[in-house]
Amino acid sequence: MSDHIRIVLVNTTHPGNIGGVARAMKNMGVSDLCLVEPKSFPHPDADARASGATDILEKARVVSTLDEALADCGLIFGTSARERHIPWPLVNPRELAAIAIPLEGKARVAILFGREDRGLTNEELQRCHHHVHIPAVESFSSLNIAAAVQVITYELRMAQVADQQAARPQWGTDWDIELAEQRELELMFEHLERTLVEIEFLDPNNPRQLMPRLRRLLQRAVPDKVEVNVLRGILTAIERRSGQVKKDKSDV
Amino acid sequence: MSDHIRIVLVNTTHPGNIGGVARAMKNMGVSDLCLVEPKSFPHPDADARASGATDILEKARVVSTLDEALADCGLIFGTSARERHIPWPLVNPRELAAIAIPLEGKARVAILFGREDRGLTNEELQRCHHHVHIPAVESFSSLNIAAAVQVITYELRMAQVADQQAARPQWGTDWDIELAEQRELELMFEHLERTLVEIEFLDPNNPRQLMPRLRRLLQRAVPDKVEVNVLRGILTAIERRSGQVKKDKSDV
Image (tube, rainbow over all chains, first blue to last red; front, side):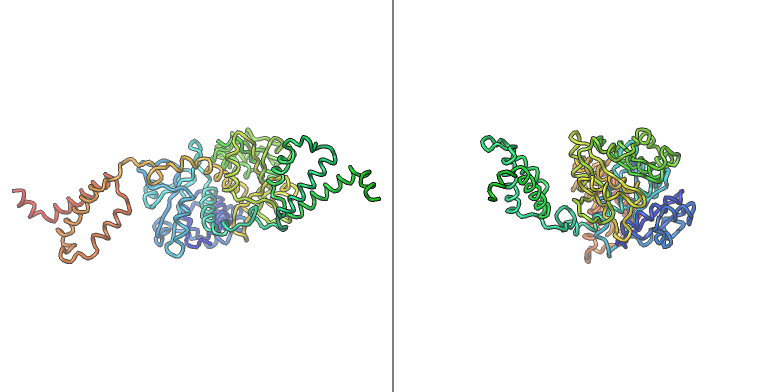
């Protein structure tokens, strides 16, 4: 949980968006929501879009001035889609997260989101230490407010889970089967080659690049033990079918 | 633009969500939308939530099977919030982008999003090369579908603009004024110190850590030339007011 992060929505018009913001926050472990003069709140549309994040809405603080929302905050970011007259220190959401997450326990961090139609005013933006810009396409740069909160809280969460990400297992998830060991793979490739010769697909006197190509293919998949057993089972079945006569002879 | 990326929505129930997806895509420069058996489409709710991204909706292809949606795709990702019975190669949205963006011009990449209430079926997920998981809080892990598309297309865009990000100027944005040079700063600090002595805030016989603290503060801000001039103007004004008598005398 990012208990030191506060999401501040300024003059939000559509209550559905407030619900969407609450859902996005809860998805990403952020719970402190402050609403500066929302047009309609509480509202059934907010509850509907929150889709289970009603606890965030119930705890949300409604205030009448931005000052009240920011009073106890040590660092303030304002979201901005437009180029401003006076340049301001500008970060992207990833840089915001890199600054904000390490402040846990040290300072409260507010992130401001403006009105659906025209964002934050210049005066509001000048209250901020940094501006944050989501790198959208220039010709269509205005994100839905809940979508913008989703992107920024996602980056906060990514920064927070970075340590556990670094320790992720093979393939990014726990596997239920051990990977095959090299000697098992080699036995499989020998078996494969034998089988290909047996079925006269591979000419031992003119092997060309067939085996290297097959190795490259199968090794790219990094097979596990069960997969190797399955493949060998298939090869055995092919051999049996193909070499029935020979096999019968040798069995005598 | 990421012309090789296709967003595929499977059996979407709420047309508003399709509109939200279109807006998120257009924000991030992705335009290829394919809808597999949507419940209601086209629909006014989709147009409303698209909020100007109606071109994406107009170009969207509606198909009746997942096969049609994926036929020309070389790499397929499926979004998944739940743990699955059979583990599957799993990436996060950033890893997805690192894999997908370099494939531009080489392969079409599909990213599948499932039903609002229960995601993709196991069979649909088994059509995918990789699963992609947005690292939400485990106890509340289901994102709104438009929010999920926003996060993933944001990562695609971040990967695409990485080069220009690396070359970003001081403060992350173009500044309209040159930074002050060191000698200008030193002259300002001398001026500041003189002024502080003049107004008897600083005792030259017992300066303590006042000037180092002020230097540390102002230098953290890395002032530009205009800012230094403004500060010196203030100091001059203070001096003038404070030292009126002395100044009058020296002017004689």
